Length: 102
Image (cartoon, rainbow, N blue to C red; front, side):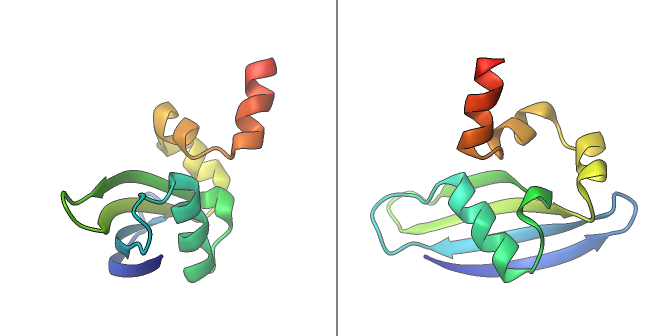
């Protein structure tokens, strides 16, 4: 999986970076949201908890996925701004299991 950043814009009002990305995957399956989240965090040197993948779409008949992600300055800002369903999609599986038990 190779990730290319189409644009990285700083949004000082919301304390975040808005990232448009393009991924060329070598396998036939689309990478998971969490794999992409980890890759973006490593490439842009950000903590994984502050990265939220908002949208991903694999182009029909190709091995290219395009998407949008937000990287916040800290988790406090992310909790205030991001929608619940986006936060839930970006939770690591271990945390999902813990929340289901409660």
